[in-house]
Length: 261
Length: 141
Image 1 (tube, one colour):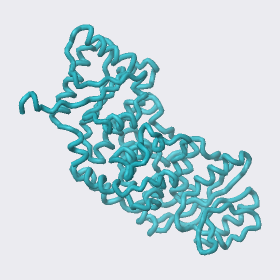
Image 2 (cartoon, chains in turn blue, red; image 1 turned 180 degrees about the vertical axis):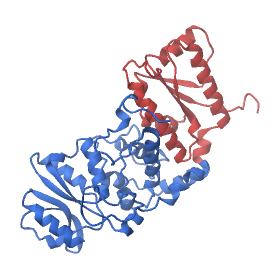
Image 3 (cartoon, one colour; image 1 turned 45 degrees about the vertical axis):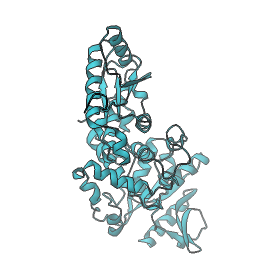
Image 4 (cartoon, each protein chain N blue to C red; image 1 turned 60 degrees about the horizontal axis):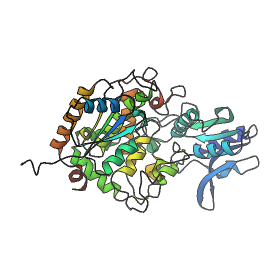
């Protein structure tokens, strides 16, 4: 698999200014812009990391740069939502999609562990639903509350969930606005801080699980975001990351995007 | 419970400038009695009411939050309340997901000519919140 990806990158490197991927060096793995002459044997695909954020930064900093990116299913979904919101210029980016392993799919509760634009690998079976999301409806309110109070009380307000998120790119962040989040309180008072993010994720979360992977307090954030994803699907028929042509429904009129119930 | 010790809820009501606020005003002019629990926050459009504003109202001691605007089709800004109509059900669900009774938040359309409806909606909501009890009890317990 990794050899095939390296080969695919090598074949495409000449026709682009660079290809964004992960590189292993000095015992660590970090995002890197591979350019002509770089040692492609250092190219890695794990651990999973959201590379589209880096692509977006490069596109904004260098308006003529033409890139490639090694992309998982979730990277492609992130790409789709970012293109709609003018964070990535699709004319200057090519995806080198590869399929995740069945283990990855299970660990991420991933429904689409392979990109539509697949170059390397064969799609594995979809992962299961998060069991907590599956049984959530039968959970009484006090139980939900005590669960999240305990979880949110672990928060050290590092903003890691926001910083790693490929869909969090607002220049002014509501989670840093003192009108909504008081500075200096740890853990942030239940439940505003995390509710702001969950609400903002409603039409954006592409279920890459990066927030949860990165959270130093191991808060199961994607349980909330999965529920919001389900709601925006039920309410407005919108699945973030599924379709480049579908417009985010929350800023459209009811004629353009009617409520389903 | 005696009248003196009965729970007297605080309710923040966001009202749009063009319809509901005028409706509330007309209720006053017509000397219709609306509940004293309602704290009015006038906004230019119900579409202005962000989820953060609702959360802050709860955090600042509101036991219930009403969001009120023009009926769909009557919005002064054509489709401002369409955003409210989509956003608020999501927020309501989210309140439920973190374990806060979603009944504490309600969305209602009240036009400038519907003073009696304004009274009806606010009275019913105040009674609902009175029955639910203080939010602080829920959140801090």
